[in-house]
Image 1 (cartoon, rainbow, N blue to C red):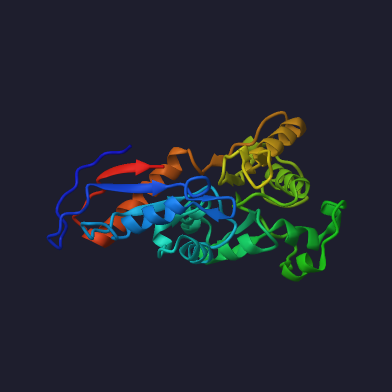
Image 2: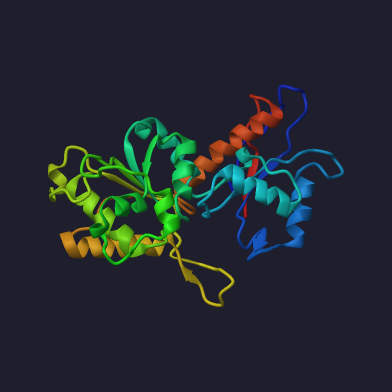
Length: 290
């Protein structure tokens, strides 16, 4: 629990003495089903309480793979309360803070179905986003063990990747083809950005490729009776292969719960939401995280 003092808002109405951050899976929703208590709790926070006061809350999840707009629209329907995009943070929402550095540079975005995460990345402001499917369409021999389907071909962006220096790799969501993606990440970071380029020792690279993972979960629960491997497992697989090839693990940035960066990002988002409701002079009060 984080604590800060509440002050009167600019409207003269005292803000509530608490705010909430909820996980989604297992807390509000289990599998495809919404927990009945979740709907009641959120209605209370939305103002259906004896004081008729809206109590600020955010939804914070390690999920992702689609836009915040699409996901909040679905959640609003399921939970039967309006969820604004400013109240919803998924694993890769934090990548918005990198847009000013990479908006005009080529980046590789991984995970999700077809080019969904490319669409999300472009909506954030990453103007030159590429996927591993784009690279495989450019040169199938990059990973000859997978032939693109017609659906994959239809979303592939045409580019000559021998001339496209990748500046950063963002693993937005769980990759669908681990082998392909491990191979491509290994190629790119070894060469300093060029797929198929000659290996350059990390200490000799002018600007090493940044690698960012958005979800540290090794395991996650689905409808299957046993936990499934998550993005954290993919990271471990990549680092194990990369170390076997090079002798060392590649430096990376890790976001997602329970990292400090993600919690700090959520705190700042809640502060903004709180101020929208109660004015610029309002500070976030006692914060409860579930």
